[in-house]
Length: 246
Image 1 (cartoon, one colour):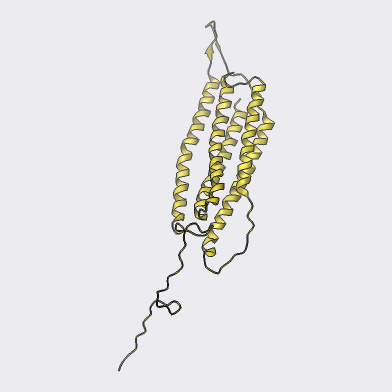
Image 2 (spheres, helix red, strand yellow; image 1 turned 135 degrees about the vertical axis):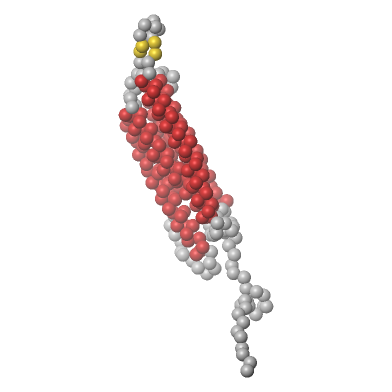
């Protein structure tokens, strides 16, 4: 007795005799999933690990500077006559009100950076759905959180410049005394690291114009946002240290 065995083959498309291929996602598709969609999770983890390794020397630098600050504060030198030791650590009035305003600006910029990170994360999660032909999620409102972070970051740097001007107006220059030197060095070192993060944010704001995939943009925004949070914590540490360890 003959038996029939069903055979399952590839579906034919439109009777043309050609095999049916599932849709592929190509790069440069206006923010939808690209060729790197399936491995960007690994790229994101590697980028975060790289950020963690990069922050280690930054934290070490500021730790060493604060330790040297404390040692230098307790040291004494011989007076010109060579008969007694004197302390060169003179008190300096910090522009506390201005520095508090700068702290608030940096805190707000950290919030907007986090909102930008969450926004791009949501866009990346929806990218595979958007790439399906015939599927539309509608027009979503995207607030420019990244631009707000850049603006607040530059406002913080401008505030730091005003703080340095205030110190100079009261006679506290970088070479006036050991304490004034450390104040300028600590705050300027933080400002330089923050400026590096600002340049990355400016780059992130422009790569969307180059038709980069949303996954690539998410990696840059995610890592830069975590770096920005580190800059906030580092500034709070520097500000509190200079305020307390007078």
